[in-house]
Length: 234
Image (cartoon, rainbow, N blue to C red; front, side):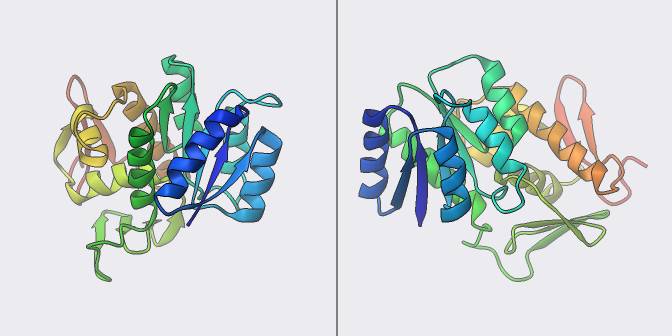
């Protein structure tokens, strides 16, 4: 399994490369945005570790390019940045990135994030059976195939969006706080803002609407969200 590492600072690239390869992954490295885009298209890595501050263009622009390209949009992206402003994190998630980590970071934490993202992007194969398809109204979540179908037509979601929608559909009709959603898909004590969940929910809603689906995710003011089951909310 190959991981693309993009950072303009060689010591950081080498640090990430060493720890990733020590855990059994192949790596390919880019030192700027143009190389990252080219390698993502040619190598089709299982994951991209992407620094947001690059010399030729922003990592956010790289994310925008790759998520807008049919051949690379399914590649999961972990953003790495020295910035701690919530706006940078939210923008990256809005563009389709799956996770983020801020510098300085522990190699153990980075590896934990890599494993988490890869597990979500690999079709939930462990423990999923061929018949493990969840359905609520026009929405079907095919877990082994890692596909969302709206009225039988496939709609593309990032790994994190898939995990959120799978959780809500599996428990259709139940209300979950933002923190409960974070705990369910990321694990407890995961350092992510509740605002980030709002961004992901907004993106899911837009994609479902674009696929012709009626509004099925309800905002419960002061509490969180719930997904309508068949007949709920009518």
